[in-house]
Length: 186
Image: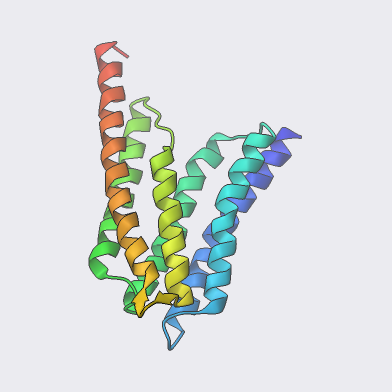
């Protein structure tokens, strides 16, 4: 039974990856640069980020594949949406580049650490930054404004800052764990 539940959680994670191109295509095809359908798909996919983890943990069916695939699915979903929004002029290119560079750095760093026997868990700060950027992207896609100011853009910059802070925290933790392994002769 656990194997089936693990497969169900991983399937839900895979749906998040499959939603990414649909969101990007809908955004890029929209003359206004926003799309209600893209927003609905993005929100549905973003909610699977909470659903798959809760299902896996709640049923005791957490898998190594799921632990690796989940953050990659987040990066693909968020990355495709912010690139499309940037192309449409809704998000600043500089912020998008910072987020994408941070994500690439984190994925490569994670791979390097795993190859050295060091495993890092996703931090609360990393989860919070991802959630904040998902909210910012949702508001931008929906075209939400307050007093003529795009609310999503302000939240996006807060998410960019959070992503850089979380990257620094992961880097420090990774160096600390790698150093401990080397010091212990592992």
